[in-house]
Length: 156
Length: 244
Ligand code: SF4
Ligand code: SF4
Ligand code: FES
Ligand code: FES
Image 1 (cartoon, rainbow over the protein chains, first blue to last red):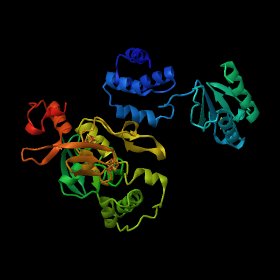
Image 2: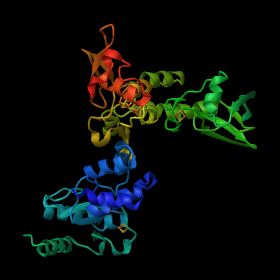
Image 3: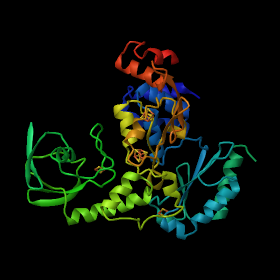
Image 4: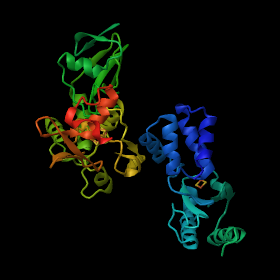
């Protein structure tokens, strides 16, 4: 764990406890999740109880306390995407990656996530992979995407 | 600064910053409450302290534990409307905590013997284990004990109170303050065989013996007190700080 990175982020905010949320976001951006050591460090440096940080980290769905994959496949489960078969896309991803939705593969390459409407309903169903919006998705297309990333990353 | 207003038509006086519930009780008016304690900040979670407050000719029903006194307001603490609204809230709370004595008693006062909302085997109710999420334990541990071992976790139907990572809190001094203020007795404070236990937090600490040789308080708690209050390290003699 590179605590130096966490320290640098906290320093950027001058150890200001009112910047807690921003610091948590920056750490999460840097590491893709909030490692426990980072939470402890933030708590010590800002004099904010761990209980409070844990409370915030579990309140906001954008925070993760477990390691996340390099690629996050976010499936929109909003009404419009749902009626166009978003559920099938999740199931396809679950099969291809052999993990349940919400989890991360052991090689830390992929995570599956579900959200509710990202405001691009006309393009539904949507799968967002690390911020890249893929509209009009089908199970086949999603599978292809995953394969592509896998080979690109030198995997099987 | 003195603030003047009326409660049920009776002129009353209060200090600026006081809450309506504290003033009403001081004057003898009864208002039910579950999440209020004068030692901590109000939170307005349980909603049973509903009253009617009129201000400038406008009347509204509101919780009064988190309502600061104001000049000229007219507070009504009891009428049919208020009782009906409180009864609904109490019935919902009874569904969450059907075994909590304080809530059962309150329900009976409002003529409720069984909640229509109770769900046998409801996973959410089971997770809460009789806890009504009033937050008193959190506030007492944070504001009074200043240990901050507890907080709310999650959101929506996963909202709960607990310890970080749902683990035994290593900073908890097992003082029992949280269990003492809990309106539903769902934390579980026990002392036996020289050990004090807080069941809900899974915290257990051995009790130091007092001068009379009887178990007295956790050594860790005494150590914390001497540190906090800047007491002599031998203040609690036998129960002293030897733990660290
Ligand atoms: S017993 Fe532990 S959790 Fe409860 S108030 Fe005391 S320190 Fe906090
Ligand atoms: S455990 Fe008790 S004091 Fe804490 S939130 Fe639940 S009901 Fe309130
Ligand atoms: S429902 Fe998927 S973008 Fe709106
Ligand atoms: S006592 Fe006022 S909301 Fe609980």
